[in-house]
Image (cartoon, rainbow, N blue to C red; front, side, top):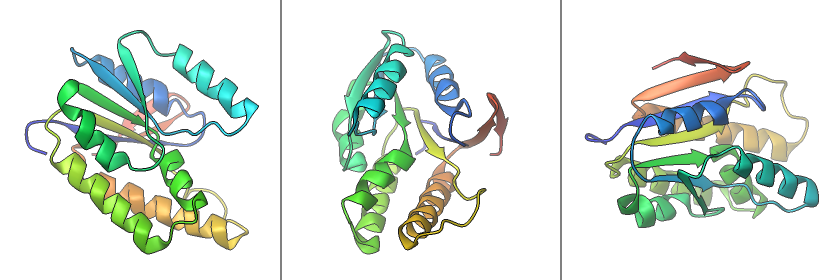
Length: 174
């Protein structure tokens, strides 16, 4: 990614990472896409999605993608001046809960990396940092934590900027 700018925004739940991502994207003029990865499967999640959507101003066009994120970025990147993906953790969760194998998930991550590397507009990706807590009790929890750590490392390696957000305060790491 030579001409554009790629940012990874990490943080815990309710850390302020989405708000920071919106502010990051709003510094760039032009048409903006908010790529939502949350699949609201119950009423409580539907309420959260609705509240999240209301927190964005009209300059953001919402694009939903629950499964093939790299392919979606390729399809829409020429229509916008900035993309914000919120969030990689939910996207990965969708993949894991579809009972995708590790090989298939890593292939999707590689596809995402390739799509981002070929994208010439600014892109911010939001992800949870899940490795700071306790070791998950279940094999599924440990698998998810490990894959999320792998995903974050892969995205960070190609990012121009990496931020860690806690208590609404962003610390630039890269």
